[in-house]
Every structure is written in C-alpha cells, then in structure tokens.
Image (cartoon, rainbow, N blue to C red):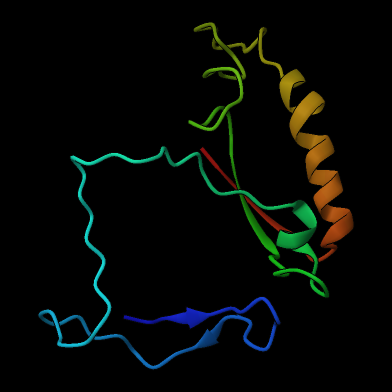
Length: 122
C-alpha cells in the first residue's frame, strides 16, 4: 500500500513513504482498536479553508475539482434536479441554483488556483 506524509512545517508535502505491508499484529507496533459498541463523541466531519486547499504557495495546491452535474448527497437543502418534470423539451430546465451558489464559489476557487481543472460528471 502506498503511503504519503504531509507535515505542518511543510518539510514534507505529499512525500512518498516506503510501501506499507499489512501483516498479523506485530510486537511493539501501535495498535488501533475500534470498539463500535462503545460510543464516546460524534464525528462531525473534516473541513478546510479554500485557500488551504487550492493555494499553491501556502496550501495544498489542489488543481483538480470534481463537480456533480445536478444534485449530490452533499447538497445543502435536499436533493434536486435541474429539471423536475418529465418534459422532453426541458421547458422547466434551470441552472438558477448553480448560478446563485455554485458558480460564485467556483469563481472564488479559480482566483485562488488559476490552473484549476474541473471534471463535471453526473
């Protein structure tokens, strides 16, 4: 298994480590035990600032972003489509939601990472 290391001091930025080998429990190695029946605190999630993700000089420098065409599970107000009626003429088709929320965000990301590549898929 490939492993990579990034450290806060930026001495390591996705530095490739020696391959990992999974074997039976080794003596003296750290062990992680997950007790799913013993709940302590909820996991809220992971987040990051746009500049931390996309800035090439002070952040990770991500330059590829995948977008869902239409809704995804991460939609802020439930699922939706760009055309909620079975009309083959698409008379009700609208990207109003994208114009209000998604496009401004993409423009902001593009300012931070001018080499951004977008991959859009359903």
